[in-house]
Image (tube, rainbow, N blue to C red; front, top):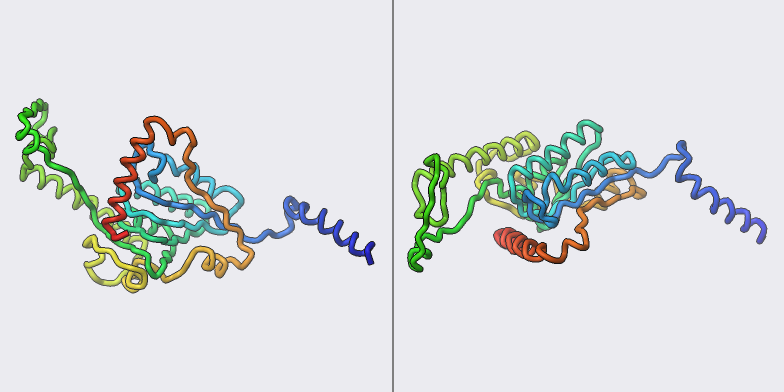
Length: 283
């Protein structure tokens, strides 16, 4: 009896490692999980989502291990429309080139640019309490002209080109500047709407409320066609690819040394900006 058990144990010991490299032994499906968490912003901010920072990670997720699918775990209140477009465009391009489907899973929020990222998926799944939508464009700033006048500060600006000092926060707001800004925001908004219509198509409800900047929670977003249903990443991927599906995570890593020095101030300011963006959505 002991001899038989010893033989079985030796077989298990040698066969299990062999399965890892024998090509004709079928492995469970692999799904790459890309975590997109935080504000979307250009630059070298380690905590922000941008195309330059995410490019190597996204490339690995599509190329390493022959994935059966790529899942996006999204928790973002939005940010830069250009970076949103670049990131979503990269994901779509790799999906089409490598014939790998993409599924988006919204956690707390996918609003504004965060929803733009979600549209990179063939399907969008949300939690019952997820916030999605906010398909609009925002420009915000401060005016300091009265403050500096009250403290006896004189603002001196010299330009070549009458629009070079457009929306100078230290000068009174000019109607012509506001008109030009609104025209720019409208163009970006139209691009955002085109992205949503192209990716969601006939699934969208026929209502202009979708594109007013309003946002919705869970099931209401599903009813409006902004999402395909209520579902979470792990159970949904098991449902599609079997209980033995392998989920391999890909997320941005922050270098240890960047936590010190000048990065502390920059990260603190970015954290406040991100906190404000989440707070605007009641989170």
